[in-house]
Image (cartoon, rainbow, N blue to C red; front, side):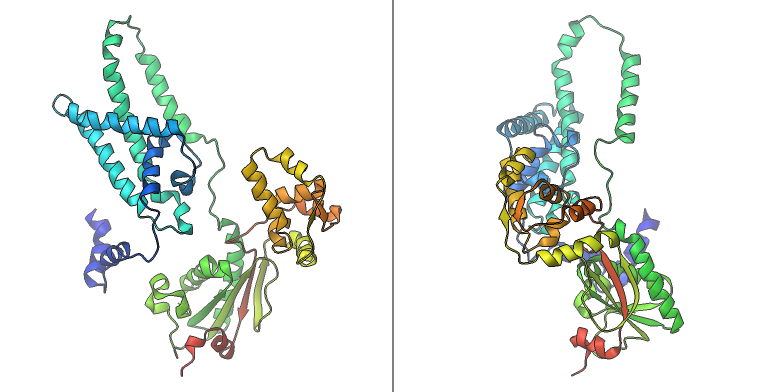
Length: 417
């Protein structure tokens, strides 16, 4: 452990601030409102409710603290925590291990409620890793409750006719974890950006080739677009640095994410090569610079989709007489119908969102709209090509080489005053 932790400890002593100090400072600072105690308590209820968290699967974080809670789930959860609290006290002398386990579950649940209530109420709150404690409470809580139940049934079991179940129990004991480990009832987990790995490799190869051609030592990267800011420029920077080039970025990307050594502050040398990575959902905006690489992840779909999007912007929307019936046939839940109805009504404002949705395209083919009208042959061809492959909602990557004048226009903070 000391060997593994030694780099961290050395940096803590020599850094300004040390990494452990920085983590503590970051954890104590928040400008965002938190989820609050109500949603923290919901997490504890779901941990030992019905079904308990240990028996649930394919959950997002927001499903742990949001949504309706049935009355029986609250009753089961309250009874479970009540039994655990009573056991922690009653069994303290005769069964110390059971008492300690029950007290541990209560302590983790109380701490978890505080932890869960302090999660920032932001778009990131859906991440399930914020609520891992709920699985621990559920797992240990079920063990403790099962232990209590076994003790309660012991007298009955001792007086009932005994059957030698050890061989069968051993086989079942091995089978259950084996099946749980090698099987799944849901889809495999995917990284949301993994579809872009090939695209980024192509862009990175072009950047490295150009940097070597210029014998560059420092490369400036300027991102534009959602994916470029969130992920793709980071991947490009890693590829360039792995190839031996120094990388700097505009200070707007913040030193706390990129490091001070990568900040292109006012008047700093941008190096021999300045690159702009542009990502977009559909056609990239026009801009100066030489295009070194361009990757379209949905080239075939875009040939059909982009003209349809342009033709549909701002059109008058009229639902056909059969539109409501089509929704009722496909969606039993009223909330789902309302959601789809609102989405379909927004086709003039956000045509790409509608025309790239498999459900929406199926409704269009079935005759949902009176207006706008579509070539059903095109819509059916598009159906075979959706959903689109995207990285942070972008599917076009374009790498451009720009000059210092363009850099000054894109990053005004770089120009000395």
